[in-house]
Length: 590
Image 1 (cartoon, rainbow, N blue to C red):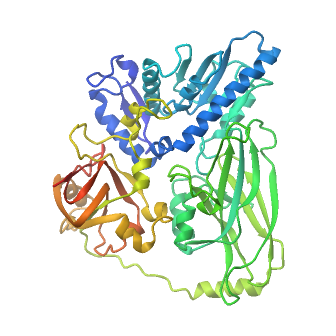
Image 2 (image 1 turned 90 degrees about the vertical axis):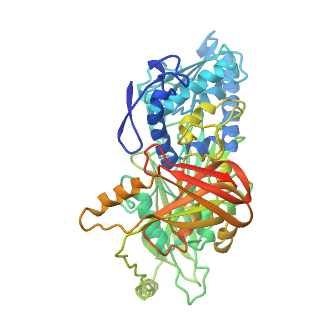
Image 3 (image 1 turned 60 degrees about the horizontal axis):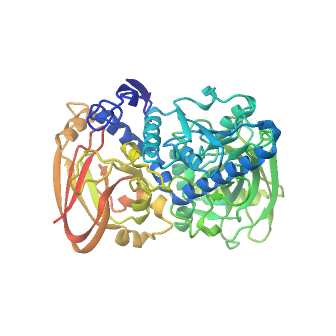
């Protein structure tokens, strides 16, 4: 028995694989029946708070990492044969940091090199580490990797793994890359490796090898600055603006969706501002400056300013210029790139808006640096020209006369369930169960955590555990405001879920909780009126009786169906919305 922290910071007791070597369905190990409730609880949290499943379903990412790892090992072998440093050593050492399901370690194990490979991997999060152990074991058993290749896995931080000696590491690999590039601690891992001098002196490789960072200057609406950014920062540490005026870039956004919906407008083109060489820890603390000029694209009568900046990155995985991944927008030629939920763009407000003129180019200076904690990227945009007070005062007067929407709080409380059948091809692909051929490897056991149902049943129709999504934010680049209702949301309804709750005698939250749990199970008969093809159930709870734009204006829960259903009439059976192990939703064709 071991304990781990879940994503909400609560301790969860789980049975590990070592508790019982025969940890099959009826055993007592991590995947056994006795651990099922804890496993479902963790899986529900991961579905709602992470995009790991979407990442593993990203075929382009998987193929590019596989190619970079194989090419790096082949290059290392050629160089080591020429270099006397390795002597007559017939093995190469590989270290996979933040190994997760073990996919990158398995890529390394299949590389076409003559030398023996000693592969070491580490993963901090215990449930995922246990899944990775099982995935590796399954692929070894199925002989998907050569018998001469060994993978030793550690449930530790990388700095606590001591099996690799000084100047013994040939290849360091990791996918500790988030939308902000640095937020998962990749530079901290590298810093430790350099300080401990683990890497060989002459022929080591690091995957990923290099990164280029670009920014784009924006005019963002008040809803983006006052709502989206504040909501995004609520789960982060640190201030949006540093004490010396830099904007910290670490809040995710979907640039294409925001731009298409008119919530942001690009003032400049994408500007490359910084490069990072991951194969050297020298010069990471520098500040780079770029000089550009911008003017308003609006008429001279309209108000315009730069008040935000968005960041993109591109990584060269093996340093040869043959394997690239990036977070560029579709406007930059990424139309052929598959839809991605796990890598987005990041956005930040400027310390002070910069007024623009429709007739005159305003010279600007963009200063960029890696943040002091190595977990984010900072940018500062300042005007180098003579910005007249006239422009600034004009913008201030314009803001003062903008009417503020008033939100009336309802006095009566009645919880309603809004539920819909939808067809969302992007989620159908990115949230698909992992199979036996992820670049030739079997990752099916990872579904126990990343893509599972709240009930174990071979009966058809049960949905996978739901995840949270702001549909318009994520998919607005594909759907216009009118098309969304007809091409994505195919059928919808609203049903009272908790009725006529009187919170005067008891506390309102207590009453809601009691009434919420009374609603154990119900079904809804669907008559779509015409033939539809549905593959997701979308739902939300609201006390607001008027939710005309509910699917557009707030995050919703999305549950992927186990198969696509085509027809006119369906039945939705739902229960356990309060359960920690996840709600149970089943969709059947009538």
